[in-house]
Length: 293
Image (cartoon, rainbow, N blue to C red; front, side, top):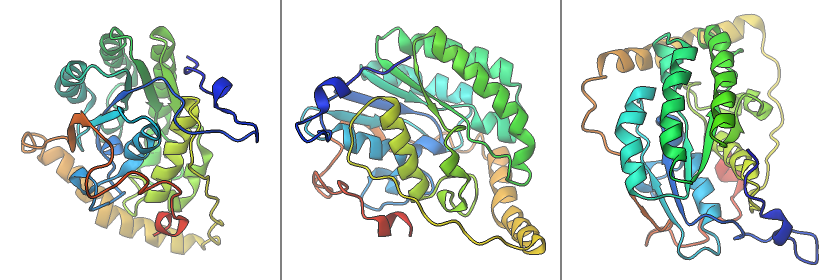
């Protein structure tokens, strides 16, 4: 679906875009660690994480004094858990904009069937779309160059095509991580290679806003590419990464599924994006030095 077009009214005489021109007043984000913001620590943000969803909400709140934002995402959740635990509370909040990312943990760590996942996703999106809210769905990123995770590339591609069908059925907007080729830069990723760095979160926020046709103040960053490493160096780094990040993460996902029921979303109720410790404008004109830390 094409998002509501703010562009026709957004241009001033100079040809630039003014912020604040969009139709939404209440945004609710659903999902797992991707939407929670893992990899993007920020002590001033609820839950100690910022992430792309917070960054999108920051932009949407500009010049919208009644704008409210809730984030119900919880790290490690599978698709069925996200639908069972988060859809009902989201409906109670009466949002007019919903983002939903789900299925990545199923594909990466549980070898789930992408076609069966898509059927489950379709039912959840149907429920969300019945509210009349604008729905944003995400394709999975291309892990093809990542050791071990790259083996799931075919399943992720199939699931992505299914997501496009679900989006078409329910008039949803697609935020296309697979096509976001900037994510092939290793600096877009956290050292665990499973989550995005602050720079990656920034780039994803830009993509989401542009998928929604929303004028924004975020500036694209173009870091210089890293020099090529020798084959042996690359493989040695892969082994260290697998030992220190990938395998511990998989073990936690498999052994703690029943132990994390007490976890709570970082923003369970819709409210202003900026609190007392984060006055409006705190993140307007993001400092590139911060993004590359």
